[in-house]
Length: 302
Image (tube, rainbow, N blue to C red; front, side, top):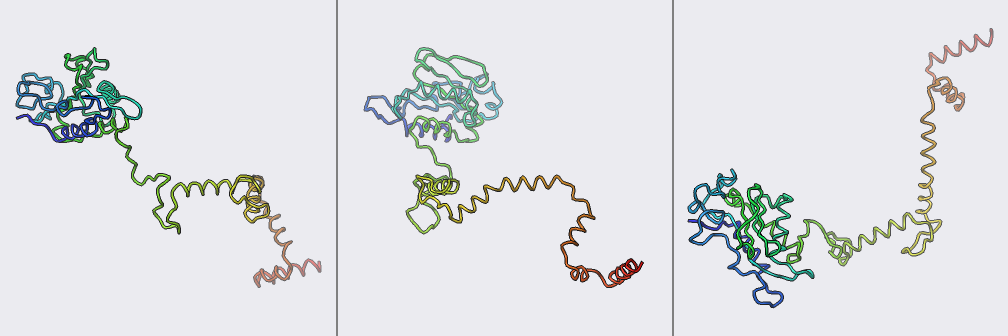
């Protein structure tokens, strides 16, 4: 017989955990367990609140999508959410604002809403609207003035796919759930993991040190407002002065790179001019030295 799948029961539990709390001490302002339903009552026939034992001929919750036909089981595949009103982050959140947010996520085709086939709701308490992923219908009966119906494609309930992320995102957006800090991300007041010699140092301390170091490096000597500003003749300031002259050196190299250095005669003459005779003699192989001596002797006696 028709039963509630674990993945929709998890959504129900999540909503009741955070919305079944009367923060304003106003009677019936919170979401009651009886207002969050999955399986239709015994007289219910056809539709997503029914499993395969209660569907009817040409049931729209089966025949209009291959996702429903392939996913038909004894599981119901819908969730009803009743009225509530909670205060959080200085605002009041109700069934109507929740429904409007939910439809916006579905219309935007967010990754965590793609298993939702339809949402039947009222944004103003007077007109019933239907968002239908298949574009088949646009309205619903008047009972949806007081509750919002959410249908899930049956293949998602058959697969047991987790449906809580979308609803957890809503509860986070309105401030009832604290945002999850990404793995390995640290806050400025978090203590450092590694041992730096000071157990009290925090991420914020390191960031402040890095900013001070940056200011110290790029600031002229004796700049006011810095922690231990650099002195005019400090080695670091001398190095910075040299680096500031780097663009001129680069310009000289670029100028030389554009010249032609292929005049071998000039290069050889320049090299020989810089060497004493004994060094030239040492560099010449013996046979060549004899040949050169003979040639020089011939020239001198000619």
